[in-house]
Length: 496
Image (cartoon, rainbow, N blue to C red; front, side, top):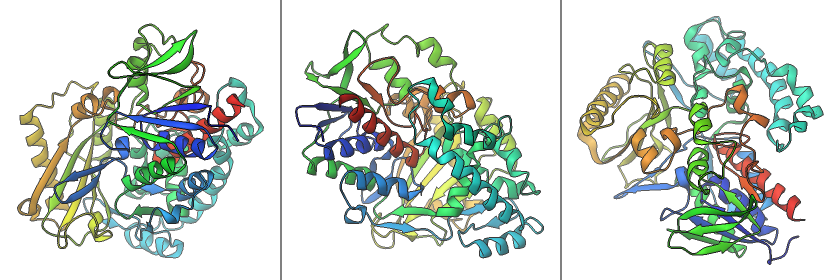
């Protein structure tokens, strides 16, 4: 165990930073978390509009065992802090002419596939069997740090290499199991968690739909933002401090070694190690002295691949609709929609929409008889020449509502809206400090994963560590928690 004279500063109280903080605090380090917002969570924070409660960002919780392990490493039982509910069906997938409600009950899933996509039902057996092997081989690779290139030659990586399907995309890989277009799409839409097109996303990420079907999808009572709030509680229970409304202006470094941080207002906080939980592109451009960053310069950052952005609608309704907890409405021409988003070539009028109707599962999010409806539309990030002025925002809002009214049972949605908030890509960039407004951070093409992603032990600055979606293992809550664990272990190793 370390002693309290070793001070760790965490920049940002997002899920990655809080994961690292609670583990390190439990190990005896003096931990101080600084968060610029008035509440913890970052993109995982609670959003309240009057009497309605929403998650700002993530709403899917998969691989719950990652999160349980983080609490265990922090010396806590997750059940004492969070009520986790397994969802069945996992979600509803709505195409123009059919619907599918995927379930983790394997036999029932086969039956539903036979009913909706006759002839493709046997594919689920092959999918589960083969992707289980891929997952088994890749799982150890996700849990390593890639501080040196030598890690790429570790025996676990060598064992995983034949299962990477290099050169093959997620969509192509699904074609080995299923023949019908919409059936394949039903197992590829998960690329949205990475902000990527399934026609570009590497085949290795087929493990994402696999883990959904193998381990399920969960909701946390009160919203997934409760996870970050619970983590902050644990940090404080171990003697750490969580300081909201305290913006870090800069990481203080001497001879390319982090020595602490400079807070807004001029206060310097010294530290033995600094954990950076800010959006990676923003951090590289703004949290270090000009000219300090040598590898990820502004020119290099501008050339890297980034995820899409999102157009968000948070609606408080005076009605509860009988729709599943998670709903995905696909564009009629899904591939064109995804291509327009990825290329930034157009703002799709034929859009795909994700709707979370969490109040059918969780009565704590809205008053009795009311509901909190969360709507996400993938759109191009701010590299696209799209101006989000008030006219465009309102026009797009109307098109989104039109599609939801036409493709769900919520045909009278508009007359039940009593509270509302909109977040655009411009807001993500300028109000939430996301580089290019890329909601899911850096892309996950093969040259931006494992060793080729910004390292957890930040290569630009000693005693500085990265957590969050912009470092290894990548975006998505489970891997962000894992980034916190990896960085906490690296700090313990380096200080010891």
